Length: 275
Length: 234
Image (tube, rainbow over all chains, first blue to last red; front, side):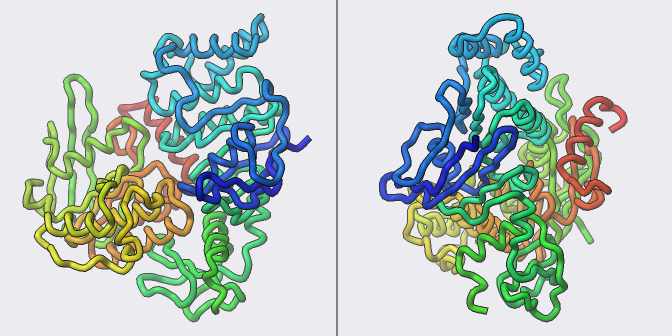
């Protein structure tokens, strides 16, 4: 069974928060919803979790008790210790016995929180809080795991540990949906949905997105801006030619994921259509 | 070329804790230097010393060739992650307030941010707010820019536009120090300095640090983990 959103639109107040967005989330796989502030990442995950009803389109999800959801803020109790947070969650899901205890230990181990059992949730660092909240959502081995921006502002070492937890959950069979603002995290996902202002700019596997870059991407030395839609890459420029004809002075390059994302955004904004 | 900002063998202790230990770092005109490091690596302490907000316990700090006092600080532009704008004021009001504070009242709002001139800063999307903060800080033509995660949380186009502005400032001769957790930003820099446990654990271009695996984040995590387990050798 594939979970996810199909052609979902949502209006919040006067804002079209999601406009015909499709997100497929498959068991054993990680889908990443990527975009900047106001892209619609949180809204799409909330619809997926059943916390928000779409105006149109469908959301498919398993039974509520088999979903794990971690919101972008909190997701844990600041005045309970790490161990109490886990125990509380376990009781809420009616988990007990030796199997559960082993699972809890493994989660503490993987999150690097084993040494922090007695610390209050509210006193943990940002990265530790995100790891604990994710660990709590994993405790009942959910079929669908939804995590909203687990790594924003988290330092790279904790980020890698969080991703180990996330891919570990997928390896155990969970369908996982994660949102992020970091493109390098999206580039490693099974499926990516790139959102901007509620619209889907690109979707598919990272390879699909790379293969579908229209026209040609080139590099040109700075500081003089080349003709056509262009953006900086270090001291050089990247330039995109929709029709494949790069301007003079630009050398063709194989686009990488960041190029593909910028090109998708340029194409959606209408740049490059005039040339 | 003389460095705009330079730390030579700089150490800072807080009681028995050494936050920064024997660090060398220089930012020259026209270059973009990325300062990477996990939480608690010493990046903020180092920057506070470079700006003259904190005295080193040991070593030497030079800002524009002299001690980092008030006069030197006027030539620096700093954009914190919180952006430092007045959210309840419009873009034009933010602009005139800051330009007046730096003795440049009457300078017109630049084209890049003019479309939002009458909008309240707090109501703009984050990408637009970052462009406004950047334009405002450039209004006094700083020779050294210190930027904290300048594009994080913005969409791909807003990021591209911001890096265009940052590069234009460097092409115009400013030196730029970017602190970041964000590997996309790190790759935009000419040179990276990776801090771990208060020391410089690695430095060089993004390509050189990423090594043959060409994965900067992986390389970064390895550097940080390795230097964490052997602090003396790092």
